Image (cartoon, rainbow, N blue to C red; front, side, top):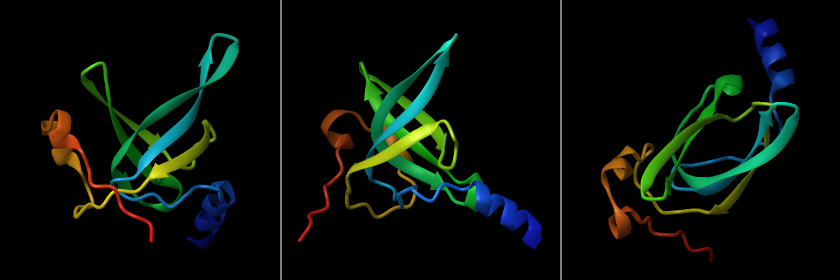
Length: 115
């Protein structure tokens, strides 16, 4: 068992930020289009995360042209260039799946103030 944990630890990224539900983030994701590689930015709210060392993932939701778009990013993937945290929100749940049913101003989250 220790051997597997040692291999996983060697492949984990040490620059991954600690994310929480309600954080507004920008995920810089590397995309291959034929021969070209470009970086696409996905900006949205973290509505949930799966923890588990190397297998940890984060679900980010945004509304694009009136349609809700969710994407699951493996946190330790080599395709992720970086994850920027823009702001933190005050939430009382670990998973914010209820945001899927809300529209417009009802889907806003209260921003956490920094003292």
